[in-house]
Length: 352
Image (cartoon, rainbow, N blue to C red; front, top):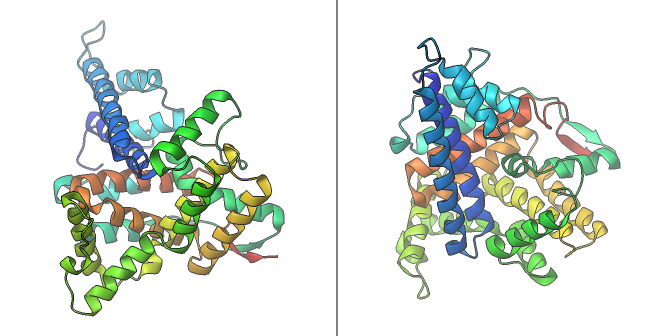
């Protein structure tokens, strides 16, 4: 980031990655907020421990009394399990800002606003990608897996087949806990219901409902129901205000990437734990891919939709939460398009 020293950049990256992981916890444990917040609290504790370690290392002089911040920070990040690419990105090995740093680096997170969201999402148009092309059945399957790229990158999932993790007991228990605690899915029927919601309704329908109220000169109160508590009302009001800001400029299709992207991940998780068969999983992913090809014409436009939908979901939690969420998602998308799985795989324009 242009006005940050290397130490500040390292800390910002760690916080952004932690916030992205917390967003995933809240998304996947949507049906059990208490469990999600327990995981988030533990992650916050671990993050602060990491930052404390780095701070201590940065303040420790070498044998000659000279402090080499980059060398010490590199050592700490490696000890914490960061990959070479992540360490290089954190330390800015090429001396140039990443797109994420350039776009978000000079923004005060506490003042991150609706205009900043548009600017950040629009900036992804500057990333290059191959020209879209039709795909044969084999490439279509690869495309369907890569539709889970953003969440898979944030969660360090596999992207070479239906399996999200190596097949072992620990991975099975992990994915089952994700489905159960984050999504309220404990069996096949609940998985199918969740997928039907994401594919046919999701947050796109919420946004559409808000637009209808706005078009009828209604207010946020028109969306309140008797079963809402104070927190529900606050969330509903914040998302209504978000919709008001973009009404007339952004339609509900701009949230389809968010809904369909999550559906693709839930499909892979459901297959992994045996709630659906391999044939069923590919059939559902076929449906999701058809929706993505209908609404989007590139990885960039798909990612922009995913991020906009995520901002809609995140907006009730304040500007700093939105900023951190945006940073994590942009880092993931930038990685996918510059050195990750999307870089050399064209967006699919149709089936051969």
